[in-house]
Length: 247
Image 1 (tube, helix red, strand yellow):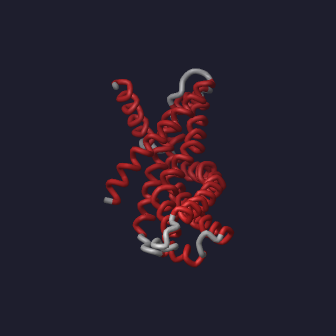
Image 2: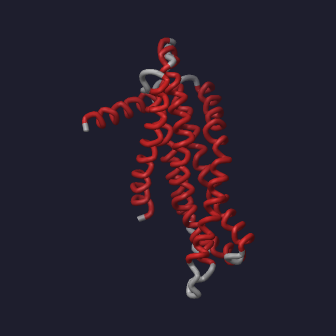
């Protein structure tokens, strides 16, 4: 228990260091753009492939499950939209990004720690935590909600394509289901969750990498810890945010 509290304390101390003594704004601007490309834009293909297939599978499963004549076919489109909007495009995509982006951040910063590059920055008087971590946090918090929105759109498109190619539901019924009882707040709820998850993924992964010790094997262990800790924290905050924002 004391070891866990010590880790939590080190995490908040690192975050205090990250958000203090900022370097020149011009340097941060260039680094944020670079991180948006490396951590966000490069994740678009993965998000697109997963979302379109999940949207298609959800629509297909709904069509096969809702065979009762008393349930209108428009509910297939409605269920696909709600599933993608409320959970998949925020929570599940965030967990997937924790594996891709989180491990990348932890291994990058961990390698810099093992090879003493971070120590060199500190010797030169640079706030290494702010210089290395803050641009990543800003980039992911800004761009990950766009990935969530992109996932929602691609997911419902996947469901529409499955309705065309398999005929399990009329495309017109599917489209009507997408429009049925649409609540704009659910979209904002998903985007807010993704922004929070982006901060969780980036900060925890950077923390695991920043305090890596030993040899190159420790970089792999730090990446594993980052993914596991980020995924667990995402699930905890998913429950908290859902309770706060939807009830």
